[in-house]
Amino acid sequence: MKMLEKVEENQTEIVKEYVNRLYKKVQQRNPNEMEFQQAVKEVLDSLVPVLVKKPIYMKQAVLERLIEPERLISFRVPWVDDKGKVQVNRGYRVQFSNAIGPYKGGLRFHPSVNASIIKFLGFEQILKNSLTGQPIGGGKGGSDFDPKGKSDLEIMRFCQSFMTELSRHIGADIDVPAGDIGVGAREIGYMFGQYKKLRGAFEAGVLTGKGIGYGGSLGRKEATGYGTVYFVEEMLKSQGLSFKGSTVVVSGSGNVSIYAIEKAIQFGAKVVACSDSCGYVFDVNGINLETVKRLKEVENKRISEYVNDHPEAIYQEGCSGIWAIPCDIALPCATQNEVNKEAAEMLVSNGVKAVGEGANMPSTQEAVDTFMEHHVLFAPAKAANAGGVAVSALEMAQNSARLAWTLEEVDAKLQGIMKEIYNKSLKASVDYDAPGNLVVGANIAGFVKVADAMIEQGVI
Ligand code: NDP
Image 1 (cartoon, rainbow, N blue to C red):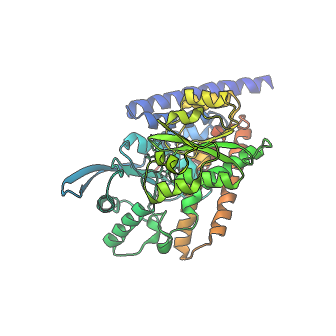
Image 2 (cartoon, rainbow, N blue to C red):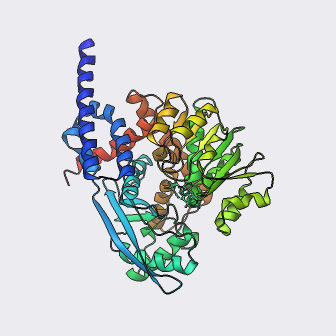
Image 3 (cartoon, helix red, strand yellow):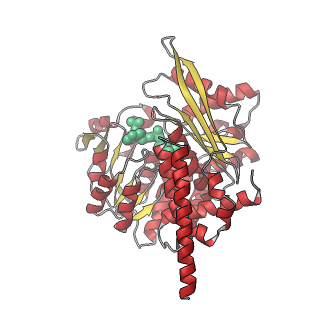
């Protein structure tokens, strides 16, 4: 027995060295791409136990292949603003892995978009999509275009120009983009229209997140936020806890946040705060979701205006202060690295019991470590926010079959998928000696399916 343990210890050391070498190579090859490096590091570290048990993944250089995108496309997006001036933005699409299905992942329009952001999101997407159990590979795209303050016509002209180039690289069986920050149903509509015109064909399956009237799926808009809450509820249940009667803080007030708030309220929680990129509101009576929906989905206004309708609420400039509000459950649903070590420590000292990541990589590594050290239940983005892409895959299935499911059917499937992702992640964490560590569990469960497919398909 002692002998066996010794062999395993040696093997673990060998794998750790291998993983460190690989990470150094990633740093050298992708200098200044901090977000991409961060995402890869987390995955590499958590895969050590699976590489120890299944050395074939090392022999077949699965990780070396997986961390290098199949292709990264960068392109010029020229468009004319309302003053008649020509503007030029940069567009991206990363096609990371199609080992288990066509590349799939959203498009982000935000001034912070660069190759690092797109690659981190695309890399995360490979494992997330695998976790959903749906046949979809990993991709992501976007532009440094800032939709804020642009007129509807400017948005349309930008989307059309963006799609003019992107259309060469996508297709229902090739690569299927969707929305993300700054890209909602309006932008998807303009891009779909341009794609249709360029192709001269109605190929519904080329984009997801479409309007319901022309091939969109009921429940897609709600899927990421609802899915996050379904996942966190499963995690809470395992400890005899629940959203019911809990106090919740949700960052952001975009697509993911709004529907996370909605489901948390439906589950009996009181959501006391939400935010946008300028500041946050705290409403001791519970956030009034109708007001947030009107401000954000209809009027395109700042969250600061919430207090006009609810004078008892407090508005604070700046985003980080939201994590100082005492809560049982925190759902970061805005953007990457919004929860740092300091924020995590504040949450812990205020007695947070669970954190569920609705946004992609919203917690820094130090924040995740802080939650783990203090035994806070932690639902990582890859697993917890996979509901959006899962329902996107259901949209693709409906488009292929030329039919439309009811909201109840889609929601039931979403609930089933989130439960399954939770169970898979938990099981992998137990199988690989990190019981309850869902970061490790989700990474391993997502990875094994993709890695096996890559081996079966040969070195390509
Ligand atoms: P939206 O554009 O609809 O909303 C983003 C929200 O986050 C807005 O309230 C925005 O405020 C706020 N925000 C943006 N940047 C910052 C910042 N630096 N600090 C604080 N708040 C900020 O995007 P989504 O809701 O679609 O996406 C949110 C997150 O969820 C992203 O990480 C995305 O990748 C992830 N995600 C989204 C999915 C989807 O289906 N939409 C699927 C899976 C993950 P403001 O309006 O002021 O910019």
